Image 1 (cartoon, rainbow, N blue to C red):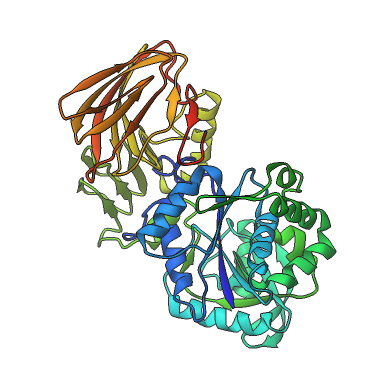
Image 2 (image 1 turned 180 degrees about the vertical axis):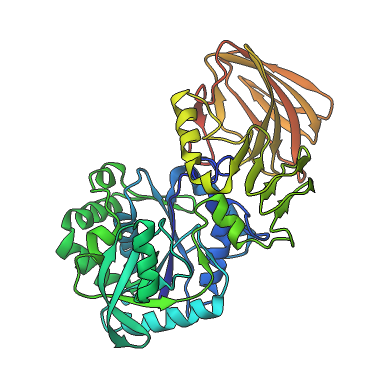
Length: 470
């Protein structure tokens, strides 16, 4: 049976400020109504014989994965939580071991969570061709037929034909310079390395044992030490941390003599920058892509994305990317957007938070929006979903005032439990054990005013938590 494996690792650097470490690009709706992760899951679910998808993600993103699967009505085949990032070879090994426990003949279709594929018919045909090769014990990668000389991708040189639309891989090539990439385009035997693979799960593990045994041993130990937590599978931290951080290309595909490539032209993009998003998005007659409240005068070949909070106006500009969020705005030339990482690096060096979180932060119980910050205070708008509850917790450095705006909140403060209705308020003293719960059928909205000399999110001691965070 075919088991889709979705690799959802990304840290969210290249599409800052919209993408953040807490909410990277795969969980954003960049094209259409669904996120890239949801589009990947839906694409896989349409394949003949596809089983429920397995997702490998970080612990920080586990609730987003669960909620986004629920949002499109797709059951999970397992959500494997990586306690530490160890690249693609160990991640795929974890998924293979997980799937083989219930299907010894499993075939894996491995896909990054953040890629765009516009022609699903062509993709489905490529999967069928790859499946035929996998049945012959080939480890298949999908090579994207290049449409222009691209220096941001690795390439695959194809060798002899294997039939069924596939070729033996002659060699993998690192990202080339422009002149080399132009030569590859002329030759016509090179393809972009898509990072998508199809092979039998046991075959992959056999090749891993041959070429990267320490990766396999670490994955086996990590799965042996795994525990179930709600809908998630927590793999062993120490065992996985001992694994080399190797890509599947380096660990297996470049070393095996059974690597095959199926070339495909399917409208693929890894949406690796704002300029690549502009290139795949629908644009007006002047080459512009607008989202949100935008007024443009004499504007050409630009991407302008306004936040829900304000309008953006442009006059006499071209080849720009302008992206506005509640707490940060990016303005860059399209040919310089790859350098956005330099901005993120400066934010990290300065100890700032804008690369980690949006002003509005989603949690498994709802969300909070930091609407005002001062030297010794912070004001948040908190929304708690029906039936949800924050952890039972306390703070060492801050006190809090809560004012309910709508709904009915059940408040725990030390030994007291009481309801707080609309227009009512309460005070949570520093050090008090407290919790906020919504037992109703409508969201609870409240304003929280924090006061103290330190207001960081790490000043939370969780004593009890229904989401496994204590």
